[in-house]
Structures are given as structure tokens and as C-alpha cells.
Image (cartoon, rainbow, N blue to C red; front, side, top):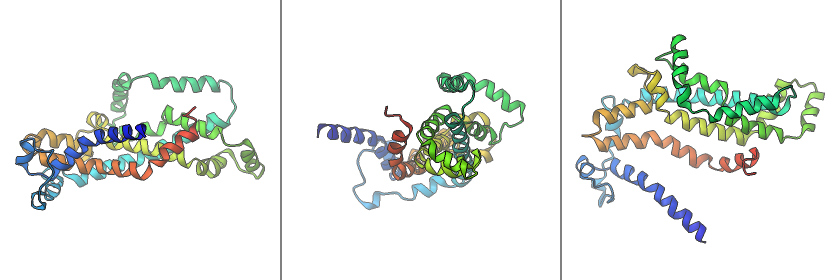
Length: 273
């Protein structure tokens, strides 16, 4: 009972900032400027639903072009991460070749390398390829696999009985067909967790678009929200809060819709051991 009470209190503590933002997004400019974001509206007349269309309009956040850019980048990142990581994980789990263990350890050791170390060399590489102010620097890294997600797929694929794969090979399945028609359909929980984490990372990514995107037409939601804060943050804080609620709403809905996959994927990939 004490554990559940502690978890409930901790959850409420984490929800407090969200309450402040949501309450401020429905308040007047005078209330927000006065710091009155704790008291809920006393009457429905005090609720300003009009803050949302004002915040998302073309003269403020310019929401829909930024949303289209963000969805485009996020979808391609999710697809690339799932395909590349599952392929590499399948290779490490089911192919026997010299140096496999060493390569796997080298791959995992790259997780200890901070992203700040490779930031400048990667920028110079994309600049030499003429990809600055395009979406390619944000999308291409997801198609070259992430070590942690490769580890998850490898652990899951290694737990699948070898007899199932041998039966498929006897029926004439190639390794690629075994991967596509047997391994991928069985790895639903791992695919879900990789897709969720990749979605959250790509949707909320700020540093990548800030470095590589220059033109206003290519701005993602993170950049548009940052520009909104810089241009209107002092005078239109209530609209800034409304824009923030809309930008983080897909992440919140995704979490509640797919939270069961977190537990399933942890158990399937062996992270509990």
C-alpha cells in the first residue's frame, strides 16, 4: 500500500508542470503575466479556447507547415530505425561468422561516446555532401541503426527457437525471407518500443534541426516553438503555453496508447535480467 501511495504522489508531482501549462494556455494574458496559473478558472467564461487558434495561426506558430515537416521527418526516422536495427540484430543473432562477438562489443561500446564528440565531424560530412538546409541529416542517421535498439532486437531474435527457422529453411525460405516473414512478425513488442522511442526522439528533436535547417519553410515544430518563444514569449506567454500543449499532445497520446509495450519489450529483450 505504501508503495502505491508513493507512486501516486510521485505521479502527481510530475503532473504539476503539465497542469500549469494547460491552465495557462486557457487563461488570459493578464492572468499569466501576473503568475496566476495555479488557480483553475472559476467560471467557463474565464476559459479562453480562442488562445489555441491564435497560437497556431500563420502570424504566430505557423503550425501546419511545421507539423508537415515534423511528421515527414519522424515517419522516415521510425521506418529507418526499425528496418536497420532489426536487420543488424537479426545478423548478430542468427549468423555465425568470425569476429561476431568482437563486432558486437565494439558496436555497444559506441554508446559510451557522447553525441557532442561527433557533432562537428558529422556536420562537416553533411556540409561536404551539400545536405545543409535539407531533411537528410535528420533522416539518414536513423537508417544506419542505433546500438541500443540493435541490442534489443538481437536479444529478442536470439530467444526464438532455432527449430522454427530450420523448418522455414527446409521449406525453401532464404535468410531474407526468414527475416521478413517470420522474425519481424514475431517481434511486435520490440518494434513497438523502438518505434515509440524513435518517434519521441525525432518529434522533440531540437538540436538537429537547429544545426542543419536554416530556411523558414523547413522548420520543424521544435524550431517553430523556439522562434515563437523568442519572438512572442514575453508578451504572449498564454499563447506560447497553448502552442506547447498542442506540440506535446501527440507524445502524450502515444504514451498512453502504447504504454503496455514498454513492459512487454523489456521482458522480451531480457532487460530485466
